[in-house]
Length: 235
Image 1 (cartoon, rainbow, N blue to C red):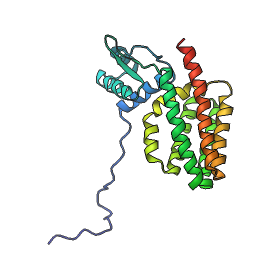
Image 2 (cartoon, helix red, strand yellow; image 1 turned 30 degrees about the vertical axis):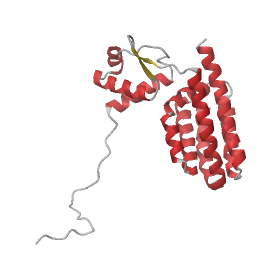
Image 3 (cartoon, rainbow, N blue to C red; image 1 turned 180 degrees about the vertical axis):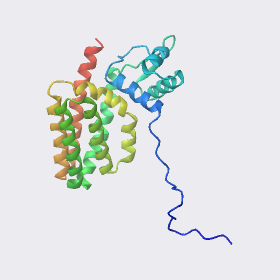
Image 4 (cartoon, rainbow, N blue to C red; image 1 turned 180 degrees about the horizontal axis):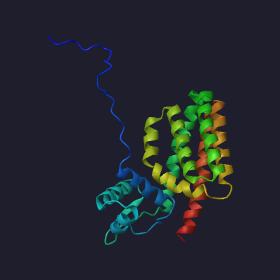
């Protein structure tokens, strides 16, 4: 007769826990390439030659090809006939559309958050905003990008706008590409967090209309800066 399996586990029983593997070489390569494009080590229009990338990154051509395909799906790489993969150029029209989508969705999330979550959401957002200010003070652009993404993740999560966040997530890499330009401009480290603080304050007060407007205004200001930079770069 087979013994029943007890709810408690035997001290000698093997662990059933699945250990999380370390990041793969492909993931590390993807992160390095993504950062290199966002930080403009590779500039718009630059050719991405597989052989050269293999030598620079110290990985196989298979990994390089997989990474380039992934970056193409994120909009950072374009495959041009007769030339092959190049760093994609964000056109003025692309940027306008991205900021219009951001303005609409972030305004929606901020408004809902103010109406339904109020002070509870504001407290969480204030914690992230403090880290954003600290990252600016340290001059750490990567950390600014990471914490700003976290700010909006919290905003959409508190508003329970899951579908809207999925849309924003699909654009995160391109958003950060634009954001990496705006955060380096004069006084952005002061004005950006100040505008985000107005979003948090409106949410804390439960003022849906003011929160929606504050979020839209913040995006509009970022859009104005980014479009001016792109216009200058593209002549």
